Length: 319
Image (cartoon, rainbow, N blue to C red):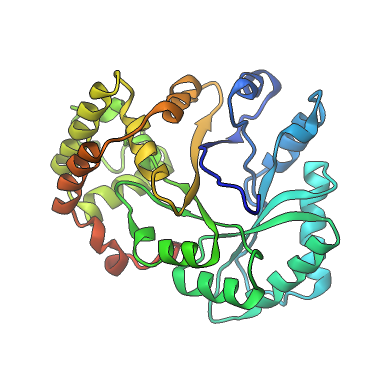
């Protein structure tokens, strides 16, 4: 991953990752490969699946080590966490280990990362990334650990949540790292399915927890449903000008077009909501300056640029 331009969307299969449901995705340009230590049995399922492939090494496995509670990151603690990832994924090496640390007041995250570097030198980790670190801490970590030490930071970034453009993008350029972005489609709200639809009840049983989170941001922080419909209308017009591509394609391409972005993580519920073929259209889509200007007209009417002050920097909502 170091030195590579991570310009392609990465399609994540976190749940229901069965042989029959995932195999079709392996014909895509980017196979499903994102796990985490707290995503239930996702690492185990992925490891079993990958080992049954003719060429297991062809599928890159990214996972996380997330420290949510006060922890003394001794060498033994860090090594045990990494070994658990390896055992669950049936791997000799973690292709990308993304690290999350909950409490910024505890500088133990620097100690933990230095031990991760040691394990990387020993061949147990290929590359190290961050997860939901803010601008200040990302800059601090990259400066302390040295050039090339960190390759990515996984954070939320979308047409609704543009906080990465307020400092994080500059840090990415300074240290040569890329953002792996989630929430790019706001739990599926940035899609044709919601165009010309009435505002949903935030507490409706028809919404997933993820959708409630993003709808709450749209209605209470970004703007209102009417303005959101205006955004969907602009995205639909742009899609029509480009051969009828979906609203989701346009929203994804907009995020990918930022130099700080290496890949987007598109959620998939295997057998329920996959959109594999539609997602592939993102690769051929090229937004024009006029397209981006039309989008910006709507964004300027929103509170999106002020989320950095109302919510906080990237990842603040999880702390």
